[in-house]
Length: 129
Image (cartoon, rainbow, N blue to C red):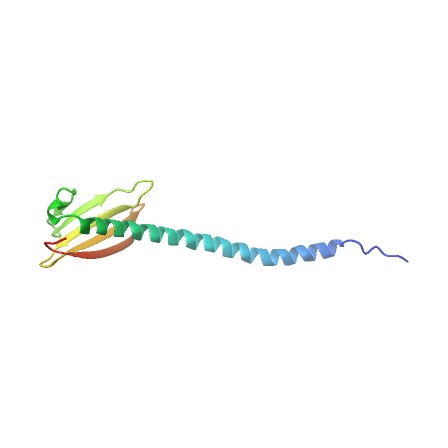
């Protein structure tokens, strides 16, 4: 009696697909998690770069120009403030500048959809550039 051994049987095909599914499902889950982590990391990096840009801009101007930069004085907390609303291409931010005896303290809060996603602070020597 001669048997046909040229192809797969239905059982062999089902077993092969089961093994393939068991290996692919965890890989797809890892790829989804990786994409989420990359997205969060990109958001973190962009918000830190925005905050750093704001601090560097303040450090590069003459202290006398602070009113010309549209900072308003908040007498309740004793600092200059400037709020920049979020646009489609940039995060929103709140900048607070507090004048001390020797240093200006600069705080930058970066917002995304009304939620603080990052915070950075720096300082600048009072009276000089």
